[in-house]
Image (cartoon, rainbow, N blue to C red; front, side, top):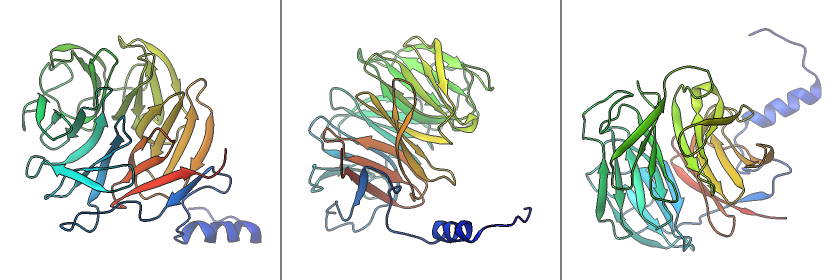
Length: 304
């Protein structure tokens, strides 16, 4: 690293950056951290590596974390424990999504499978075959199972990209294969680690193209529409209303709140620890799942 002359003010700023601080919001952020928001059951006192989080229509919070006893956990909006399930079922927990019907979806990056559950934890659908690997053209196997999203009519789009595969695969609501698009590269419509995926109210599909440092936007049929390159290293996406919430789990360790209209950054929360997933409830409260931080943080707005 080249040595440079640094002003006294710059040294002060640098020192502030390397000291661990409990405050998790940028100076002008609208959000503040809520301490101790969750009430664990007696069998558990801390989070495992948290990889997935989402909320249902009643603002219940669902967390997917690397814990053998309770990998999927449900809490009410006050943080009270409701139920858990999935013991012994997963190899490498990854993302969790709640669809418009309040069904719970999770992805297992280890076994290369995705599962749909009802609210009580009953399995309703499986995508993929346990420990069977496919390629970009495969109809029923994966090799990079990362995240998924569900469109208004129930179609399922899978970001199959944390591995050799570099695609988005689309399925009907019953799991029947429809199509795939992508392939490795840097051109529009190509991917390098498509890690997270989300759908807006118009069924436009947003893909966190992580190693290309961009979010790509497609129509519901996979036609490229646009891309945003002001997103750092996008790890996880969530869309709520006309806003996108994006976590950057690289050295930036931050959360961006962005306008869907033009990709403009409206707010920023910093000081996170390897955030992977983000969710937002009906009140605007934000939940961030941290892998290395082994935590699920909650932020609420402090001002309009």
